[in-house]
Image 1 (cartoon, rainbow, N blue to C red):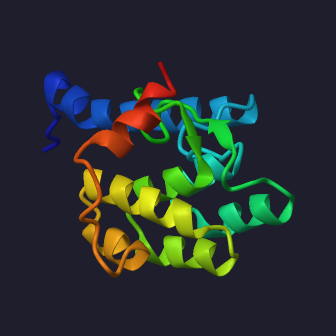
Image 2 (image 1 turned 180 degrees about the vertical axis):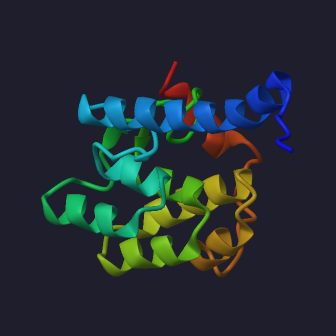
Length: 156
């Protein structure tokens, strides 16, 4: 005796499989045409690399001659739609990684005056370990929100 699956049951079992196959074909075709939706963002400059916390890319851009204190344009998806023009040093604060800050500091890219400003920005962003590294003597001179406002004002 042969039992047959009802048509509705067969469709219910095959529909997810067909949808998954169609998705794979769509993504593969898109990538062959140049679109790479899952590849991630490739940084265009050292500030974008810092905002994405990509230490190797930051070093590469710096060794190619980019100035970590220069203001660069960054795409809104890197840091924020409110922060579109930022230095590499400032973007490093958004990485929230003290290791990246140490790496850039090891390149002699952070001078004494910049340390205090960056420490205040780190405080504004709530990155206490970075602020502690940059200003081990404390950040009592920081006016709350001022460093962040200066960076954001540049993008308006």
